[in-house]
Length: 448
Image (cartoon, rainbow, N blue to C red; front, top):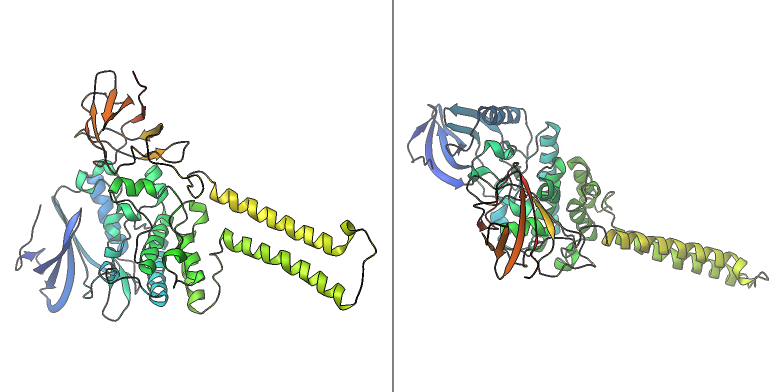
């Protein structure tokens, strides 16, 4: 792993001052521009070997060059790109103010601050997406905060590289498990709406001071988001206005088509609630149900009031009276709303009503055996809702015999593999990496 010492000159232009952070793909240093000593930059240096092919190298360069076009107050500016044999780096704007993760450690935030931060980040995402760039690793650590209170999104150039065949294991899984969108966990693919999902999770954490997910391990975190039973925002943050809660929950919708379809749409709703108005796009099924219930009593009471005011008694049979017809119509609307709400809660993958208990389920895992015999994961799904291996965060897996039978804890599993050989598969379920070489299914082995 490359480590640059303070005082070293980099790229013939910058002098390293000190390290300010490190991640799975590289380290970040604050450096001084030798031609302008008062000018500081943040220098991100990728670890040697992270980019393995010429194609990945060219794509990374093109992503950084594309970022030069972004000129937005909530995006960290990129200044210069370096590519020397097995070393890639780029210089960018230095922000001396910490990041959102540090601010969130202080506890739940007020609605006004959450709205302000979410609106700035969404505005930055809108500009990034307009250039055809998807961040793919939006998280509090990548949202920098200036001393004046504004925020700046960073690190979208590196996050865009997603082809695992061109990366080493250190960079094989693009994104942070807690903020990965359900469709990325499920299929390995996502578009700009994956960034919107990540911002929804961040908004949830800012307003509540807690994660919407309960799992601790990386694998369980990835699987858990395929369920939709995270606690509603206003249950964990009673100070959160209904409008903001609706915005956060829509941004976090598991169904990608029910999520905000653009960051600009999200910005528009945040601006509305900032002005004390109702958001246009954050209505929930529960709100429609409440409106339907209200309409029942409004229609009934209005008919009663009019009749009572004039002392009239309708001579027609009760089932032909206007108030009966109005009340029946309202009840029909209520019934339809209940059906829609129930359908929403019972859609595939939901555990709001059908909670999946801990245990082992028959299911399918799509993925590969990596070169180092670790398991790769692209999809855990079953007819029961989710595949939860013994309800544990990880489980040692080892072959039992040549028939394809594997053990996991006290249980044995039958493992059938296609496109790859059965031998030598062992490791921990939490030791996952991404790949594209094969497919296998796993089911609990029958008792002998």
